[in-house]
Image (cartoon, rainbow, N blue to C red; front, side, top):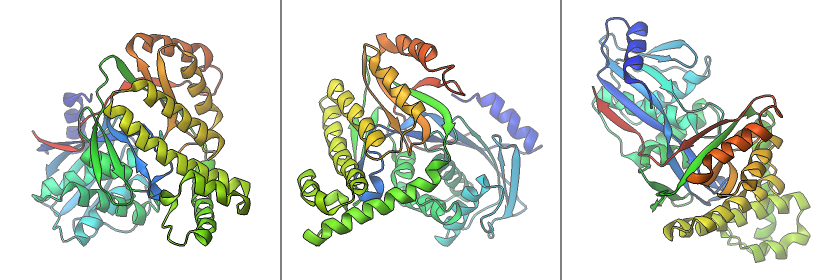
Length: 388
């Protein structure tokens, strides 16, 4: 939890004489299961996490929007009607993009000073970018005395990321950041954008985040390759099944029948997507039944598929998952997020939390360049605005 007094003190130092009137909390997210299926029209099952990005907001009368990031110790300023084009610093592109999308929608922005402080790890696979977009959007809307429905705002933030950060992200991150509910996971249909709140109450268990603190650059070039491989597999399947719209419509049996016509690597990529979509719907059912044993088994299956079939894991993530699985009392573990570094998660009985922490210290830290950061999180509410 952020220290409110310390945050207010930082605001005063950056914007002397101004008084923050609102505070916005925009959470990061953990995807419990359903990885690399959003761009294949699949189902995802994220939660809004405890760790969040915070924005302090004060109105200003000079017609400018000034935004300061404590993470980069930088301030960018632009007129309310002209957020400018993408450029440097890169983090400001998310801010400019959100402002531009709000203006495009017809929102008349008002002058404001924003201080951004985040507890969400950057590059950790827990959606620091969506938290930034959503937090800034809610801050600018509040300063302007306007509002946008949560689903529309999620789509607006995604468009900002597409156009200003040039990241072809799906809709999961922005949806959960805006629509998250405490003690619930969000089962999101990435095709229809329909969603269901699934109870996720961990009475005798905890969800642990294991952050590798690494991000292999391979990911930026490999993600588009995975998307092309999925499309190549879909094209092969459509020769026999012309009505297919995406891999979402494919069953494992259909995929196996088409295997002789596919490159082995393309088949593996499609196999992950098709089976991961099945695992996600089964995982939602396990949560409805409060069956954490089954949920843990599905987590393990997801990681094995991501590592061996989709090949987006890395040695650090595989090691953390292997260590977690070896500790009695761990239901399951898997990488979360895009991969090639970032975070793994483990669903753990409370009685086993300390044993897992000790195992990571003993068998992971010192083996790799950076030690793992281990902490717990739980399902929280989505973005909220508080009047100070």
